[in-house]
Image (cartoon, rainbow over all chains, first blue to last red; front, side, top):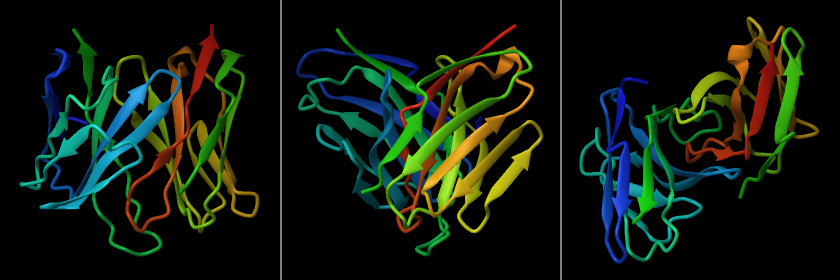
Length: 118
Length: 112
């Protein structure tokens, strides 16, 4: 979707280095998500945020950090503690339907960032 | 937490045939089940979704069925075309947090 922009498209990390992946959306969506995609593994949730200044760990949060200072932006930092960072990283956003039994809303994805180790 | 299993991992069909991909989920609280199509190196695109208050949903050549009792849902593609070739992912969500659990994907190849 044109409303979600991830940058850069390709990123290389040196040993011991932290790198930050950018995700910006102009869809006025409340919720944003970060996924990691490895071959044959599907999409695994790293972090998600339903509202500004709040975020939750997903299934594989170790070695990653996020911030949500603005509604439009949800950057992901891959820290040096993440020993196997090589993967395709996808950011998504959705309307947050609220805390009730039918609150899931369709998630729309960016084009992804491919991270490799130098 | 939720666990979503997807089968088969690869599927090859002849153009014009039907393709069926099946997913099972573990959390009976899950109530939202989207399907995504991802072409090589590109973003996943939502193709159809279904909520647990509906048993079937159709959009042209694509349909999804849901069996809440058995906790499984399936994607049906009829009259397949070469441009249907891609990796398809199912997912399940229970709503309270808004996040989804994805299956590992099915690589569909449609041969002309």
